[in-house]
Image (cartoon, rainbow, N blue to C red):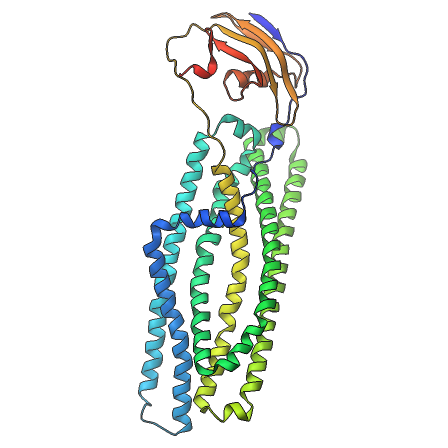
Length: 426
């Protein structure tokens, strides 16, 4: 048995390399997510139909109040039996619309999770070993488990809210314009400051969501390390160290989560306050004699009721921003993994090999410019056993990874029976 001595060289800490590729622009990420929804266009149409029915019932709620108020004001009891039936019918139709919208949006959402998760898992099977050396196992598994779930917030949950509450807002504003377009224009005065608040919150949500994903990956990484090496932890009394490390990462995740809560808790009431100011002005003007004398009591109640119904869907539409940014951040993480280059198989020669191995002036330089091997030469005869001897960090593992093509040489060539390893197909 011969021995090969390797010179000392500081081996790069590959596992500290970043797990995420350069960030994809938000618009491209969103468009890429929407392409996954294309096969489910029929379900999205049924979702839109359901929420359109739901939005229509909001208008009829206001109209029904108008008819009831006018009937009471005129002491008209001819429709005394009809009104209760209309109320029951109204809520029945609303229930049908809500069922269609909620069921088919959930169908799209769960299928998206399934398809993305399978695609990510199959991608992991095709990635080279160098990817696994450069990224902690916990970070990778977090993408498959945590990030995929978060993606649905951008593509389906947000779309559900957008369709349901967006259609409701459009329907109610249309009704308000039909009832009194001059008063309704006042509601649009608060639109610019609302859009400004949403824009500021969007940037913060995206930044915080990326921080939450990173800390969740670290939590998963530490957990996997402790579970996989529990015996080592116990033997060397590392419980306190691991507990402190896990606590530090979990607290960071907690802080990131609370920052999201604070941002949302400030943004939503601020939008509601602006809406309330606009509503107050509308009510004040609506009560002026010049306005109120031209409409019936029922029409006035109907208008105020419809304006009041705007508050809830507008609040939901502002909350959508948090879900959307969280999902987009997760989408960027998922697509960064899916865009990783796959392992190349360029082998064309498949024949019996004797085992003559030659390493000719090979060098290996890691991405951080750390030199693991430099101009190393070794010839191994067929059937010969060779021991690699050297201090920790000398490059023994790097050499083995080159022989198995887990890593590729920076320079030089490795041949087997005189043929480059890249041409051999096993």
